[in-house]
Length: 176
Image (cartoon, rainbow, N blue to C red; front, side):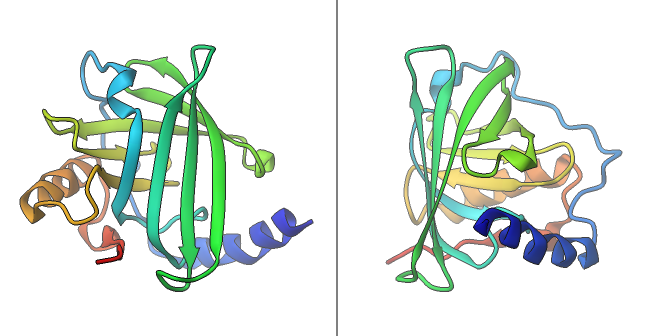
């Protein structure tokens, strides 16, 4: 029941917002991507407006391999503040092509599958930019809570190159 309330409350808000991404811009995944590069503990250091993470702070993401060919995705969102109540978001990632995934959210099945595209990842795998063709998400993930601002800018530029509005990409507050 709470899922229907969540969707009912959030969808009108998103409909009124300016477009987050130019849908005519190409979205190209990292070439010859190895999905093992995405595995690990991440800090979300920037995001675009999303139905999944409104008013989230201190967001962390864990990607783990499974016994099958898929991966598990766990997002921890603190609502309203860094010490706010925890909203866990869980899903299963299935790679459909190198660097392209279908995300199925466990407790929000009514959203269907969300396509995720790895647009850029640093050579040391410490930071990644991930987008979605329909702009449901736009994320910059880092293996450290407070990464080098130049790397964040590189990740932002990959989102912008994929059609995201620069003003739609906002920092995510992390604990000191």
